[in-house]
Amino acid sequence: MTTNLFLLSTPIQLINVIEAKKRFNISTHSSVAIVSAYADNLITIKKILNKSEWREVYFIDQNVESQKEHEANLKAGNFLTAIKRVKQNFKILQSLIDQFSVVNNLFVGYYLSLENIHFVNSVRYEQLILLDDGIATLEINRRRKNNISFLNAWSIDFLAKVIFKKFILGYRIGHPKSVIFFSSYDIVTAPGDHLEKHNYNEIRRLVGKKEKTEDVYLLGQPLSEIKPEIVSEGTYFNYISRIKEYFSSNEVIYIPHRDEHQSKLDRVRESFGLTIKVLDIPIELYLLQQPKLPKYLVGFITSAIPNCKEIFGEGLELYAIRIKSSQIISKSMLPLVEDTYDYFDKISDDNFKVIYLT
Image 1 (cartoon, rainbow, N blue to C red):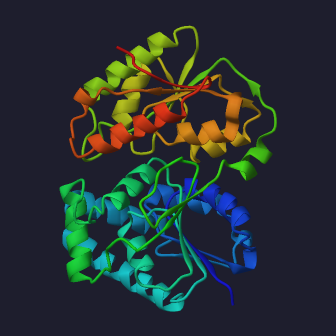
Image 2: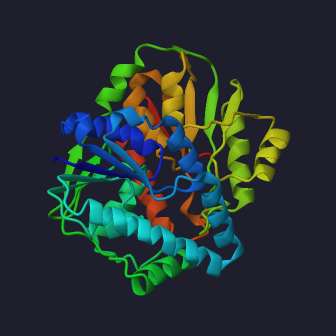
């Protein structure tokens, strides 16, 4: 029996699944999905994943509340409880590896997931295909081109996970010999890797002609909340102030990222007078469902900008606000930030601009 296996972690990967199934001629009866996701992603994936489009769907853990509890234990430092849960999930992962030890095409949504890379290194396949997962695609390609080990982590927390899972649980963590990037990003791959470029043709067929409002959608990001920290909260708010001033003749609507703190959103609303619009699906899917588009879509280093450039074409005017390199707090994140803006510069055109707000 032909089996095309998809390892999925985020909602945006489901958009790329639509494109991949068309490009690689993947049928429903040969498609199997394995979902391993954080709680917020899990909620959205369960909402938008259509099981009728799959032969089988498996979850490493589909209980949202237990996943939230696990994440809370990790955050609080309750490591003994968290380790017990990690071991349970590893057993589930191993049982799925045993069940799908040989597949035809293996599609991976997030290559830097330790669970996914262990799966990749534990089964036999004809082709390994990496689905776009936003700007992480650029970092994955950089790591493969420079043969950067998974032990070369961007944070102490992630390094601890790598060490525990590799040396205690026996995760098989290492770069596979070659991959196919199925991506809308125009990247130069490492020798042996291959780029299969797509332009969201299947999704674009669904768009049709849409009217425009005069609104600005500003895509928030947890740049001051994530670890390692990219910019300070003060720097972030300075950019919000400048963005509001730049688009002073338009209503600016703030679309928060799920990882932004409520206290931060309260300040965005109260100090800058911005309307907060909370979405429970990716912005790309939200805009596809709406009869009207905003006039402008604005963000920082979010993958939604190049995605929407491909999907909506001239239907949207897009701006990436460039953060000064000197303002980046974590030097381990600097290569990713600079590579992202370099790529944005490369694909900029009349409808997509990278701008400095000084």
